Image (cartoon, rainbow, N blue to C red; front, side):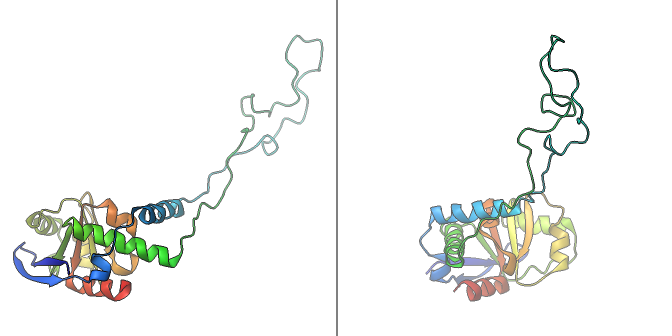
Length: 206
């Protein structure tokens, strides 16, 4: 059963907690994690790009010059793609990039991501993130104490003080257990949890 040290906001070790084997010691399935990350990134795309084809560009209804006798190439419209202000040949149009991943696959990917963090010693557990003020310098001090420069902070419930304190720190993000995703777990070097968040993670993914 994997174990992780528990720290206070000063960076002092105050205990040790055993992690759930099902969640934090599961086999790491890299292809499944890749599939879920690819779907997550695809689903972030708005797909609102749009350009006009030659049929949609305004104007160009008259033939610019007669077919023969001018010495120039024949032209049927000033809105053909080779003309300035002409239409786009294969114009991008709004589309849905969403990819669907089964719930069981997403669960396997989440367990794999959490297990890889536990295996590499990249999980930092706090008894509570009870910083005295919602100040950036307070959060910087706490993160520096546990050597976490690029970190994802996972909270059990919304904590405005922590969110504001971490909001301006580069490479640090706060999230909630119910919005946790594989992409962000893998993106950040350290995964920071509070004891309450850890309990909630184990309840959700057990």
